[in-house]
Length: 263
Image 1 (tube, rainbow, N blue to C red):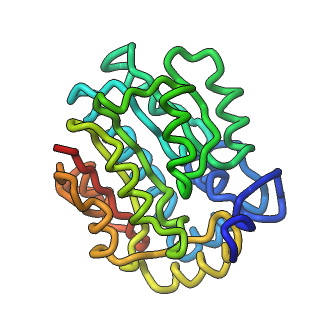
Image 2 (cartoon, helix red, strand yellow):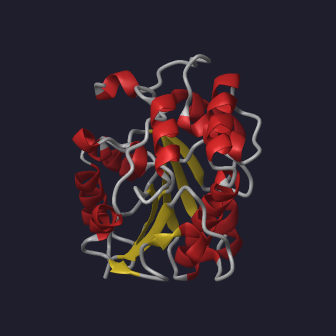
């Protein structure tokens, strides 16, 4: 399906939306029946999917803390989704109240939620932008959000890249973002692995085809290549629960997490 046709432009309660499905999995209220139905069909195949959503959220927050404690004071949360607490700015500003966070999403409904819920929060700037067109928002980050790319920046792309289809060139997107970063910057992301149980891949793919929630599962080797040119930290590219502790269970759905540092 052409890229433009997968982009949400208005609220459509008849089609699942990735941000709303994730919001439901995390216990949020900003979702519709169609999102809940998709979520429950996924849970019927893999009941631990809701637990996995929590793992991914914790990976995001831990990555924020890692970068903030390393001295990063600028954060770009790309594909930020519907705000839910604790949020990126809350974790980062615990380390330093001067941290600036730009919350970027391409969904105008998500952007509206961000504006409503984050309006007036010091250092937080919601922005409408599409990860598939990074050059369109990089200059706006400089001029509108006063992001200084000569200083370290942490880019967070959690729960997003597997919604970028092959013909939308995810590796090139990461290269563009990596190249604009100063030394000492971080890039953290998650990605659905094709090591996921086959029946879940089949169910989630058939439920979301043609929608903004359509998923492209990729091999660990393909995903690892996204971090070329960056120094891997932590356990490297690994299932997200391996970032959180040694005693967490594996899940039928495999979501890989990785954090790279620019030297």
